[in-house]
Image 1 (tube, rainbow, N blue to C red):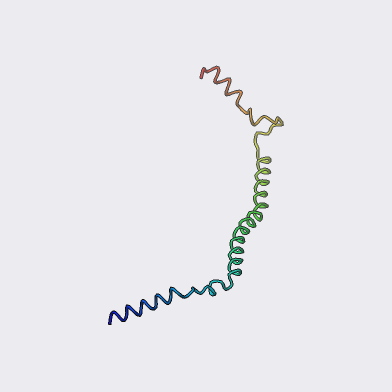
Image 2 (tube, rainbow, N blue to C red):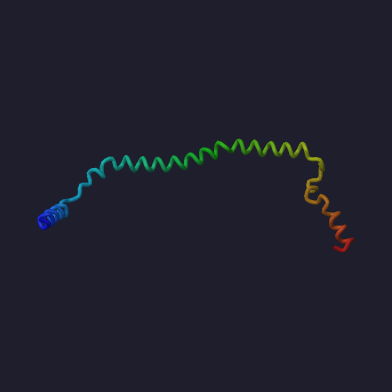
Length: 101
C-alpha cells in the first residue's frame, strides 16, 4: 500500500516537473502595480518638501519677531557698529594686566 502511494507521488512530481509554470497571474496588471509603487514612493518625498515649503513663512515670521524684539528691548544701545564685539573687553584686558592674571 505504501508503494502505491510512493508511485503516485512520484508520478505527480514528475508531471509537475515537466509542466511549465503558469506566469499569467503574475504578469496580469504588472505595469499598473509598478506605476502605483512608483507613485506611492514619489508622493512620500513630495509631502516632506511640501511641508517644508509651507513652514518657511512661519520660520521667517519668528525670525522677524525676534529681530524686532531685540531691537526694541536692547538696553545697551550704541551707534557704534562694533560695540557688541568690544563691549567690556577693554576693561577686562586692563584689569587682567594690572592684576597680573
